Image (cartoon, rainbow, N blue to C red; front, top):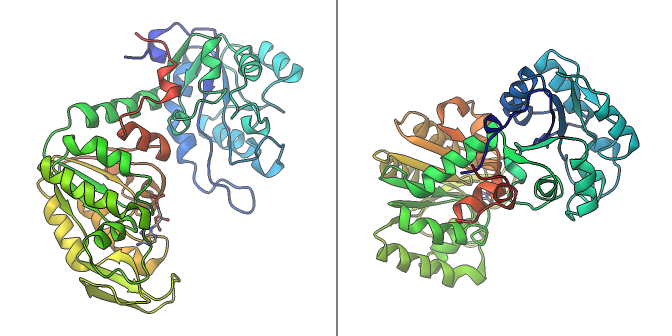
Length: 392
Ligand code: AMP
């Protein structure tokens, strides 16, 4: 078990907190969705209530080591000020003399936000000098950015070499949920995998097969599996070099007594646009047509498989949900799960966005804030940003 912010004395200390303020911005540089900022509040409030001097750091977007004003964290400082009802000082950079003196001059209960860490290429390179410079701003380090814990960057891993390092409440909650899923999930346990690529999820399937009872496969990744079973998939997206892997997974699932559910009918179109003509077909998809969502029979079949589950883990939308004609499957499955008495965990990324957009976020047990990080947890990997923290 790793130490949390509760396990150390933070009173009056300079607490350097890695948060995930990588929020979506619209064209006017306004925050389109502040979920990530809101999720960091418990740790921030706890530190403020303990009269710490709170120094927050985050990345935003991919500026690739250059200062790009459109990726400034300034809008996040403003939004956080509104949420806290308290001034959040926006600093000009993440390292350097100006930042150091600002950090030194903070009073107990003050809060500041460093500028985008990725304006320095040293952040993603995990450069030790950069990490040391960040660490110099604080007395203690708290990692509360689950979404970047799978990356060994200066602000997640490098910094821990120089400061006592613990996890914040958000990371603690994520670790708890994923730990339970991996080690003592209540059975039956259903895993729903969708999204674009089989290749992203092979390691997850391999690691999870011994722990689950049902595997529901949808989204574009289903077409690689269907092709391996010699179904006609028309012009659907699939991965030719993963067809053997898909066949292998059927064999392994049989050995482990896991039932695999694949789509039996499909919403198809000839173009991926919102206005295109759509049809529903069962079994084979005709040439030139693309499978873009699960059909009504598959929705029923999936719901049947899910209704007795005690644990459901869902990663990846079951259709091309960004376009309305192909969003029904994802919406139906989400609504169905939201009505069950079940431990429901939603992997981050697109699935989390879909659930948020449907207004069902508070109906799920846990929505992860990390897409890539949650996948790596499910692969059974230890995340470098968490491994580097102090043990209890
Ligand atoms: P991932 O990042 O792997 O979870 O993939 C998410 C993406 O997969 C979303 O943008 C979905 O629109 C896309 N997706 C889901 N189903 C399909 C499909 N049948 N064909 C193409 N893309 C899909």
